[in-house]
Amino acid sequence: MSTSPAVAASVAASVAASVAASVAASAATFSARERWVMLVASAWLVTGLQLDAYAHATTPELETFWTPWHAVLYSGIAASGLTLVWLLRPRLPRIPTYESVLALPNALRVPILGMAFLLVGGGIDTLWHNVFGIEQGLEIFVSPSHELIILGMVLVAVGPALMTTAAKLNFADGTLVTVSALLTVLPLHIYSLHANVLGTIFFGHGEDPVRIYSTDAQIFHGYVFTTALLLLPIILIGRRWPLPPGVPTVLVAVPTLAMHLMFLSDEPWWMSLTIAAAAAGTELVIRVVAPLIPASPSTAWLLLGLVAPPLVWGTLFVVADVQVGVGWNVHVVSGLLTYVSLTGAATILVARNVRPPAHAFAEPPSAAPQPSGALAVSPPAAPSPASPTGSAASPAAPASASPAASPSMPGASSSSDLTAS
Image 1 (cartoon, rainbow, N blue to C red):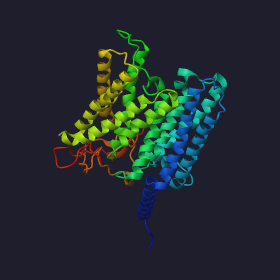
Image 2 (spheres, rainbow, N blue to C red; image 1 turned 135 degrees about the vertical axis):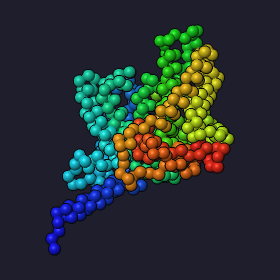
Image 3 (cartoon, one colour; image 1 turned 90 degrees about the vertical axis):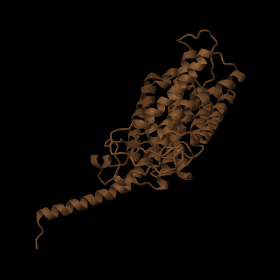
Image 4 (cartoon, rainbow, N blue to C red; image 1 turned 60 degrees about the horizontal axis):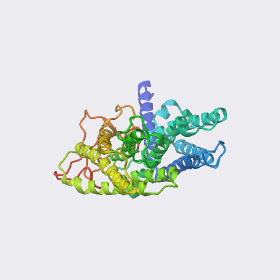
């Protein structure tokens, strides 16, 4: 008995759909080995940038492209690229198509885009140095080729965190996500040295009143920028997973100490150690006090943004006044602490609530993790049908398609949104 064309077409479509679903599922899942290999390649890449930044900071007369530091940096680009090829081989057909690349999960699409920026930026950088010479001072932070390299590095480094789909971070996953977040944000700290308070020691000339266009004003606004940059990885990880104890402290302390090592290696360490200690103390206070505050998750996060920055920077000003003296008067110091408080709150509001359209970064169905809230230990409430989807696993990364969770808060029957997992 012959099979009708309609039945044959239906069977073929069903088989094709099954194969596509199988490919999508395999593309969206990553083994621990794959994630850690990608993390090592990303660390190699970012280490090259740190070594190069240290070399330029300590050897201003460096006037050649052919340095050991560039060798580490560009071999890191090669290692990351080869790792991506290794990850893509089992997840793409023998002859890749535009549709098959688009069907890949964010954990691969984002680093692929980053690698494209790195390759283009690296090629332009080589040509740029040969034609215009080696950048010096502020030129380093505004060179077009350097901008492409930093952007690409950030997008590659976020890959290991995006590959993690666990609903709750165990020690190994938590370590991987935290290191991935650090590797993502460190290039941003380095490249924003001209607008970043880390990597410098300055607490005002003591002029009264302080001039608007001055070193004082530059550093003043550096505190605002640095506040947002330090908070972002904490918020974005917290949108997807409960934050294990100590992770927020690490995400503040490591960039602070790394920036000191690269740009202030001959200076005393009291400033960097004070920021690290203040971050640890602030996290401890928040984890102890948060369960006692009957507030919604959104309000609790907003309070975190309002309180944490002035606690950290205020502690620094107290120690700085003892060590070197703070030249700013009460108007500037109180205004600065108010600025960073409002900046923290604004960063929380934006980073926790702004999401791309549901279809923009949609993952295959099997890839979507089951989020467990921002910092909560209790199961999240189901989002309403009208709520936007998407979550972020690391700074500078597009959100994945997990719904935003709304766990209960202190005063209710479950744990606080700001308590440890």
